Length: 239
Image 1 (tube, rainbow, N blue to C red):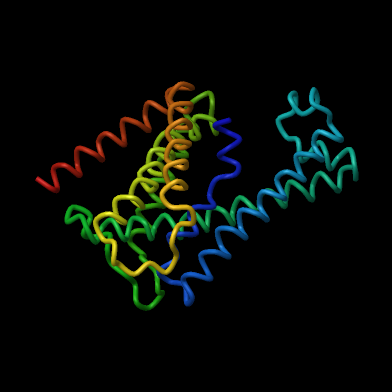
Image 2: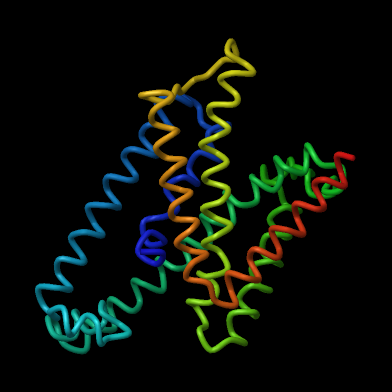
């Protein structure tokens, strides 16, 4: 399930761009609800096609289900087409993650003096240029780390999963904490079903965090170690 949930992940990243939306309330609802609905429907449709054409055994024994499916349906041209499409999609998600990740780093740098060099905003390009360069550098290191292991891509997922679900659980708690500490703060978008919704989401994140750690490999250990170093750095900054 760790890998399955990764495929559906990324929907939350749209929230990091809410400050740059013209209509925050309408924009964030369309981005999150609309994005999740469309992507979820597409994923389910694609997986239904895999099972329908390849069968469960064929799907379990292939390393490239999309290519196999298109080759069976449309021959070699279909296989080339889907491989090209997947490569293009990979580049687009790299671009999207770089954009949202850099803005998260930029926001953190505004609160932490140790990251002061990363809170620079390039007025000409309208981007947090230094934070984007930092994100690119860390990404290259992660790719290099994955390339040195036997698991490759799965090792990078192992690295990401515990940290990803840990911070998602904190975001759910933050909704409750901020409601208590700042009840009168302006909120363009209020969480439906509060406080039940964030509590259920928090518990779900905790369970997935446990599952990602129970499935521990070297990547998860490295991810937790990096998170621990970051925690020590944060405590040092605030002491």
